[in-house]
Image 1: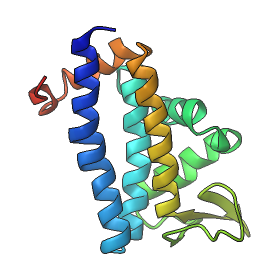
Image 2: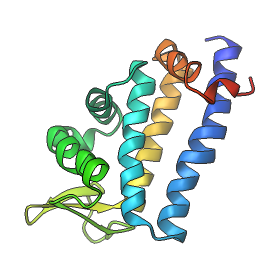
Image 3: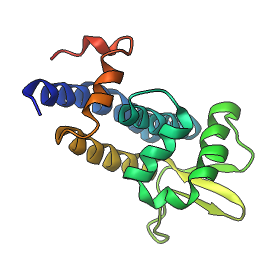
Image 4: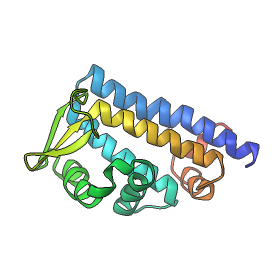
Length: 167
């Protein structure tokens, strides 16, 4: 792993991942209480992290790849999560079988931040953001070890605006 790649990853994470993605999720959930907007963003960011892994577009493939690799608690429900939650939020905003129920998962009922209850999906957006942050940090660690580096660079060096990363 060259110093250039390490710097590129570190600066990208500082500026974009921590500076924009998680800052916006935190502000939207805790300060603005924009739960549906945050849930929508979270689903799109899962797609984006998957795109960084694969090096190309493909929402469903990217979404499932990232969750399978870094958020295994959702592996058993990938198809439903993509179709009902992600696509429901992206294309309908108020999906038929999804409740954005709150910001934090009740500590008395441990488990993932997105779960099914009574035939409906429930989302605790702050808890999911925390899970996503942990997953993105694991992905960053893999990048720093050289895994997915070419795919990562293929995306960030071609995306409009991201070519300005100061390295």
